[in-house]
Length: 301
Image (tube, rainbow, N blue to C red):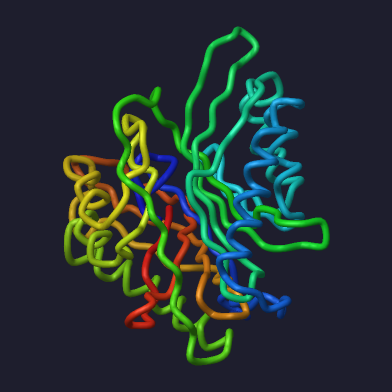
């Protein structure tokens, strides 16, 4: 959730969802089902939307996949709702002329089947026939019309070749308290992540906070996702801001009713230094409970 590149904490981007004043929101109860079943349904929904995307222009394909209250990060800004998302998409004229498809490579649904997340790769061709490649991270909620993206971010990537890091997403842990307690715990976990990044290099903060199966989009030169704490931490070597110059906080926190998956959305602030100008950038981070300890761990960004 915190990269630093101007469009992703490798440049700086993220997202959050909501505790009353701070924006904490617990999902409404959903029909209880086994996590593996809900995960299969989520991956099937994402795959279908991605495969059908080429039938329309890129911007419309994404809007069709978004929930009405989506949190979309694009052009270095956060848009809330489909109208705001379309405005941000339209800042790049190519989005109205390109055709895109995408395919998830992994995902996980919450234990109650109400929320979930997926990560995957997208490919498009613009009006001039030039190809493009990206990695995407999406947080989903189940709606009356099926699974839809509550948060979405696409990160630049290069043409994929070679062997990617192995990806095997593990089940999340079971929450011991109610969803509001889980949301407050997640809010505090995000703040602790920021405080840690103020004391140690950013890559080390990610390494210490990530789950064993965490996924990160990495830098624009990374063709594949970075998987696992060590690979994610190594991705910041040479690109991290100086220690003590970056901080963030969640403006919104959203958790599944089952309290095992959640997302934070907020703003990253970077102080000016010799290596970088001052800046503020939106971000979102996906979290899940560790199945052994019950602690919230960074899962995807």
